[in-house]
Length: 311
Image (cartoon, rainbow, N blue to C red; front, top):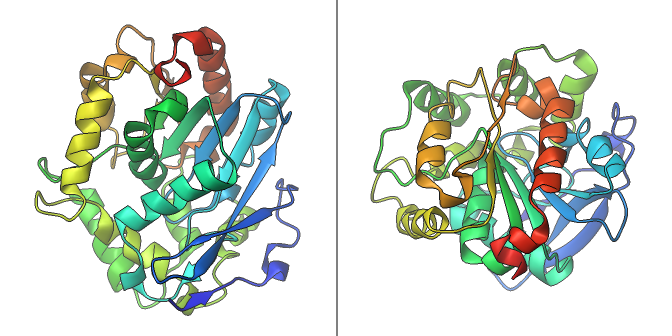
């Protein structure tokens, strides 16, 4: 597998993101290895909060949330998915599959970090990957926070705006990462932040991951990932692991998933779920401190003895 690695100097002087990256090698499908990166902040013995980003962002997306979580005594851990951020970037779109991304994050969480009692936070693809992990490895999960995400199987149609996004990403001669993130924000994105989202991608050859991800969403019932997602949905629906649905009020892509998850998932039942106001698809960017505060409240309200994964 041919991979690219973004030069470290591309990440110099990132606004409000002073965290030094950690790195570890994980197996690739060809018998080699890929380097995954993550940042973390907070007490080493604090309960781990795993912050999974989506398309086409990276751990930079969580920069306003990490200090809130750490100040509350939690260990905030924000990886970069393979193909994004400071992690290695497979050079071909064909190197990216849903199953591989689930396995790469699993390898980091289990084999490298050995996290237990996890509060999983997933947005966009961070939820598509994270919800699979939660279903397939419930013994490691204390809580689940789904934020502007879902677990599509292809059995229900995706909204038209998502198909427009998929076609735009796959067909654009030049993929303007910062512009795509800005388009998913309601409160605006300044030039320094846009540059932060562009930093991992020096040129188009580094963008196979962002280009591939929309096409990996199971939007048809016979998609290669549909069966695994159906099985994960079934397991999660019956799980008592506490689940918080923290969706924004301005996301046309995933907004319709919140009521479906609320009425389907046992762990979400009987809970007051916050709506993050004046926020778009990238609610961490628009309203990071508000989302982080909701997560802190959720952790305090659900001691680990009540969580399925802690038993």
